[in-house]
Length: 168
Image (tube, rainbow, N blue to C red; front, side, top):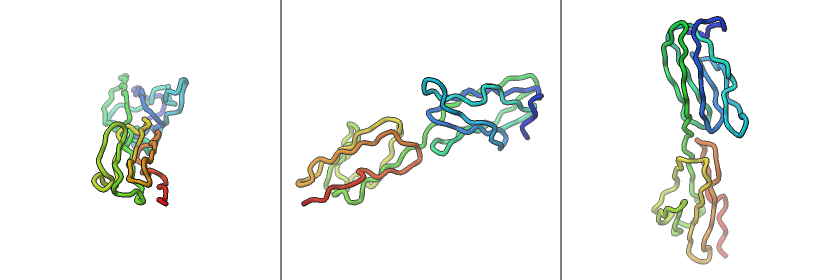
């Protein structure tokens, strides 16, 4: 079904709670997006209700860095339907720099994961908004190498540390 003109009898009220921007799609057509609002909150640009004809519709909220949210719903004439959406960011994949010696131990946040060789080449963080320290404890002469995983967009791959000191 197509988006009905503003004179339709049914309304859909979309309340968004997102950590980032998002596009609002109704029945396969983009009808709006979120924007940065006061006090660093994200608010829907369409404070006005979305107007739809009675019947079955599909509402999707998405962005490139979050898992899309989609709901199929049926609305009758003179009925309001309200959705509260919390987008979940896609995890960020962190790849350990291939130049990092395999004998270095790895600590992410407060969790020790053993050596680089036993840890594997990459890992994910479920909370990419939170800054996380990463410590590589390497044999001499490298010693301790610190990296920090800052806030990142979901769905991307980041190499840590960005550079590895060359041993003398």
